[in-house]
Image 1 (cartoon, rainbow, N blue to C red):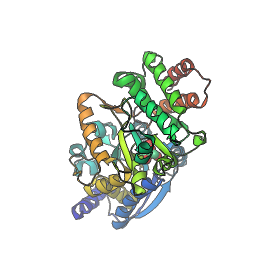
Image 2 (image 1 turned 90 degrees about the vertical axis):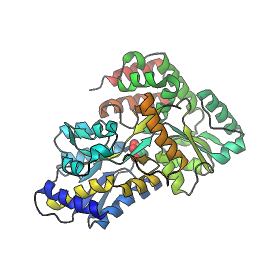
Image 3 (image 1 turned 60 degrees about the vertical axis):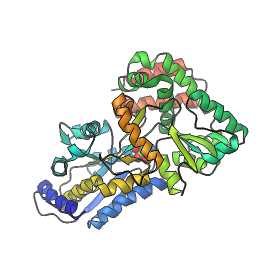
Image 4 (image 1 turned 30 degrees about the vertical axis):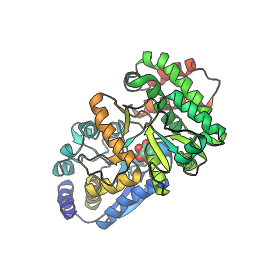
Length: 416
Ligand code: BGC
């Protein structure tokens, strides 16, 4: 710990080229749910322990769509925060605007290249220089369940296929519970659709459609079946879902009102914050048809170019803190994700996190590891946004045919 802070100070001298004092660090993020807020408070505590002032810039809204809108207006106004939660290909876009700081001095001093999987460090770099620091690895293609609801409904196991899933959902409905809890906004709709498409169509289809944007995949049989399955899923959700936040849907599972939720493992942060125990109160499993695959989502912070030496020191300290083993452990225990830093001790992590860590490694070898399109990891932000809108329109308009949605997907994929 001491060594790290000494190093950060040295690095800040390099970055600032002048003497360094403690400064204020304004951090834009969208971590406002119970589990998320607990997680980000750990970062605040570390920064305060280094003498910096933490200025919280939280913009609510799952997936960060609202946060990104607010960020743009701040940067356009010439008043960027010190750091912002930005991820995936959006990092490259921001870097190409020339507004992000080069983090190479700390990255080199701290040996980030050797501490991160290459697939992750590549995303953190622009023209070979680090422009962001990764926080975690979230898995998106999970199914969560309330163990008591399954038991009371006579569902013995977590469903492995979509057919099993709908059979289980029928039993849960019959027992008087809501089968599937969901939030209701474009981001949540796309988050639900992703494991359906991957489970129905498989890895090659997923990559063709959502990474390569192949019109044949976007407008083919597997997409049609995925959309039909997605529509069927809607029949198991409740009418009150419209406008609901994802964490309120998780609360419905926690409170024994609903059986299942499809969601990334930030949902586990909610279960854990509510004192629930995995394997006992709630269950986690790969989403139906998703075994052997892993949709990854890496949160990261980019730092904006700032002039003041104190602000630069705070940024350097923030980068060092995020990559420290201490932070990686405590943050990810609360957040539901796994550490992004390699070779971390996983002893304190639960079974869901251990499964995630194992599957991350196994699927990287097997080819089942794919970037999450719904969490902005696969495509340019404008393309993701356009596709998200199509899927959401399809979800909300029961009269729209899969054929229309597929044509619209092809158009959305052509967004520049
Ligand atoms: C982020 C998570 C966050 C979730 C809900 C995801 O895109 O990666 O960190 O908890 O959105 O807001």
